[in-house]
Length: 249
Image (cartoon, rainbow, N blue to C red; front, side, top):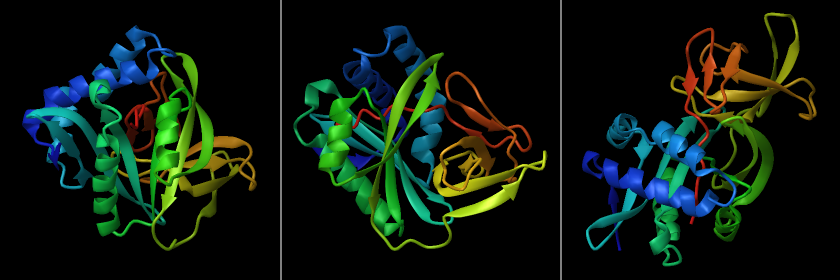
């Protein structure tokens, strides 16, 4: 097995691995029609081509006998802290259990450490028991669980974190919305956007009642979310791609 950086020539293989991995991990819990829709939405060939050419992306692929059998993708998000976000980590089901997932994760973590991140984050649907066990085995801690709406269905999503550096900056601030409401913004809970992160906002300082999101680009709170969990700020157009299910093997 060899690891190398992805290229534009790998796009079709990456799409194929993603589909087979999702079916193997979630076929028992998610209808195949929704899985096919997810693959077309999240692994669009044009978007993947842009991703592999993005200098800010960490995008290794695992190759066995000349065939791509696994891949991972991560970015550094510049918040009040520097966070490495793992967008996905997939291994073809025929090659699981051979250490490829761990090798891909090690490659990603090494690049993120070199980028001086404070911690690394990954998200997996709770239905993927093997995926959650993978991150726990690799030294990640469960940081929380939330419900995500995907295709009109509600799924529990777990967030895992690994602390790798000393925290910097503040973790919370209060903001006034246009309606005069006070919201408490958790800068350690966010999602990567096209222009800046989206931060989770709460009604109360104990972070028990969620308000919505604060756009890190314009600091507005008019953020819309659709049924595929795409997010867009209505004020400035900052966008987040839909939730991706990391198979994590």
